[in-house]
Image 1 (tube, helix red, strand yellow):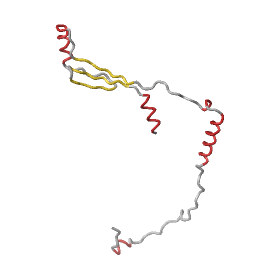
Image 2 (tube, helix red, strand yellow):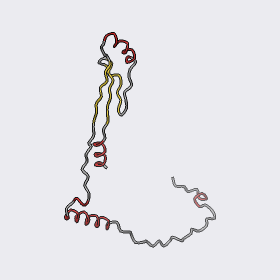
Image 3 (cartoon, helix red, strand yellow):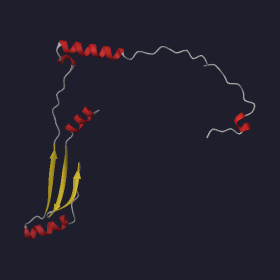
Image 4 (spheres, one colour):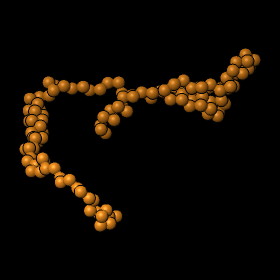
Length: 126
């Protein structure tokens, strides 16, 4: 399980988008586009006058591993194939079925109770 999760997390790639207004972090988003602040709309009017941008977006891309080494059973040499085959055969041999056990009281039916003796004698397990 540990190795499978390690391979999964090493191959996943994602982006982290951050939106700053001035020097203040306003929004952070993972896997999707970041929401813009209200100053972004007003900024278009200011940008025409001052030609200066106060809001900025920072995008961090974390790329996973794209190439994995995939090897098959035929890529192994003959000795390694023999070891794997014998190990598999021995491991499967560990799980043999148990012999069927004889249960002597399988068809036994208990006698019918006329009265409940515990209630009659007022003896209860607490």
